[in-house]
Image (cartoon, rainbow, N blue to C red):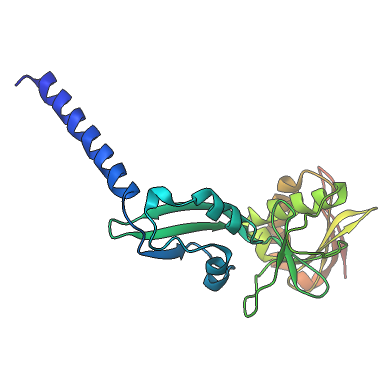
Length: 235
């Protein structure tokens, strides 16, 4: 055979394999269901949210209904499925990640879109405590221009491992904008409004160049709101 004939035959065999694989998966009876990827959502909660498809042929399962039911759980952001040749259906869960903790009871976190997330017994998430916004029901969304400023700041801080590690509390102040406390010694850090990537970077540089030599306990306030200078109140 010529090279072109072999290539055509290889493509044909590949196509047949794909079709056979799809046929095999669709006509496989589901023997078990497993979940993977979840951190905050207990397996028991995931299992209770759906009607078990065990014993049903894969092509007869209402996956849209399963996805819809799982997405009603507060931490579930996205879902994908895969199935082994033995009939084990694995539901892969992508969860929302907390970026802040609201004050009050019960414990309520929120993610980068402002969706409120319930605390889970025995599981603590190391994120800054955020003041100035009221916790409500899980699934509710925080909004408004003030929250947008705080959210954008937290996202910028989380993108910088140093910035994230040095912050303990965050609040909104109408006059000063975003205000944070350092995790070490509770120094007041003024970040103001907007340009948070730049300001977090300035805080990192200031800490490495100045604070590391003078000591964090030398400062009361570090004001990072200005473009060309950092203003400090020292002891």
